[in-house]
Image 1 (spheres, one colour):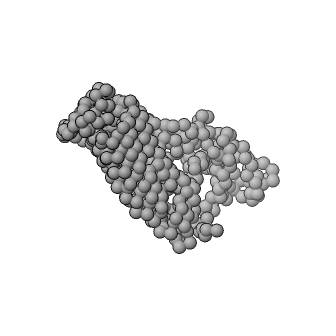
Image 2 (tube, helix red, strand yellow):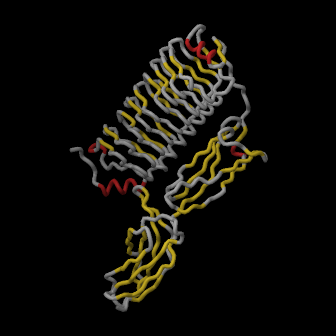
Image 3 (cartoon, rainbow, N blue to C red):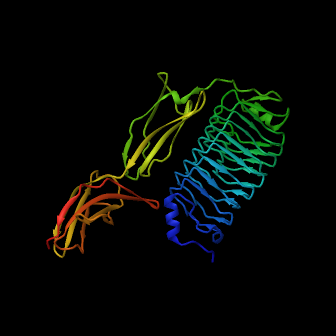
Length: 431
């Protein structure tokens, strides 16, 4: 059996934002969902770790940097929706980046995939909105489905020798992509591989290609040029699909001085929401020198979270004629209690009653806090109840005056979120 540190050390480490392993020489595994939704800001995986479970760090929204030690693979969903992750260096020990590994990492700007990597998973970098630069050195045989779909700022891509297939939607909706070079040996470009790449100007296709899907370039601009050898399959495809063809000439994009998006006026229609298990995306309006900008043309829009309680950000990233980014904060709060009462009943007990201020709000339950008047520190008790509170607090001391209060709470993942406390109620225990 693999040695593990005791749970109390692990819990402390997760909450305090430090590495969770007390003695790395005893640990060689990170379990499934081990740090799901944690508050870690940085982390160093010990060199002894050989196995990493699925979604191990997923939804750790404060995680900014990670050191991967000597792990042999990036597990499925390992950093899924780590919305603050900016700094990742993949070591030569990694042989595989699995499905959804970095999907939704909207702050990740660059990625270098080393020669050791021989397999990439579906959706591995899906919706990495800020990803600008990717270098693939590994000998991978295919670019899998939706690998870079939705990477709004990815502008250029040169794939390594060894790639034979560009799978479905591999680069779909890469809105800034203008130049692609496919290596000798590529055989097929499948459905919607470059669909929606509205700024794609040049794609160099080798003579080895013998299949291109009819939808491979759907939604691309009319200026698109297929650069290929004369009399090749690619030339015939271009002519039969009404796409510009050139043998050697590559049309360079117009050099336009970018406008600074940070100087734009960004507003959101709401800044406060109540947690109700639904998604909350405040409407964003962006004006630049009095003119309304368009999402998907002038900027991309991402939200750091839309459901979880807490303070979150709506962020715009410049694209097209604009560069830079800007953010606005909004909160999703736990509803406060109302109609709070505490009544003496027999056997040295108090009956607590309370309701949610907003009926449609979602809660996991209520937390009661109580102490003898004049003493320091409250005793606290959580009562799981999604409706109205009606709870009897027992074993109180007769003739003592107690201070009592209550608040609502939500358990989201492994973390608890709380509303404001109610006003303190003072009761003398008479019975």
